[in-house]
Length: 111
Length: 114
Image (cartoon, rainbow over all chains, first blue to last red; front, side, top):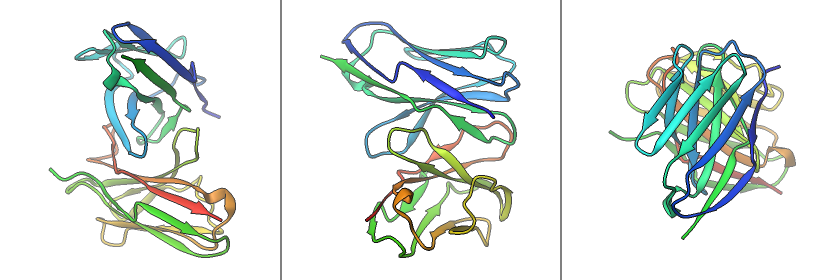
């Protein structure tokens, strides 16, 4: 059974801090891994997609890394802003784009 | 480009009643997904369509849940009869194909079963 775990479940930081969100998965034979953002009452927005052959992806202040051998991915957010407050979800695809989601990390960036 | 549309946005029903949700994916997207997201958890895939065919429905409780995508465009998810534990947000997503591509999500339908 594929399991995806995200730690911590919640995180509160002051504005301007750099932070790291963690995602671990039990089966390393993945096709890709995707990080999403979810705002309250809204759907998910894709942030970064890492193919199994890649080690990292970057978009603006966001950087996601993938280490298949250890079953881990991290999402690095630089210079956090209050607008970054949301729940961040990690999803792992094993085949045909079937994603297994973690429970998410709820981030609060304080002004 | 219009995003994934879902309706209704909210629904409150009593247990044993029936309910249906509608999803219109992004134009040209062949793959459509329905997810169930219970409060505090990540989304769980219920069913995946490729055009009008079912690719995966292994986690769909088929005794009460059904879904169709007859013309390979929009889709309907039905629950009959509903149980208290079906209270959740039902998310629809679509992607261009099924080969490790980005999924685009709709705003979801929040269901409360009393």
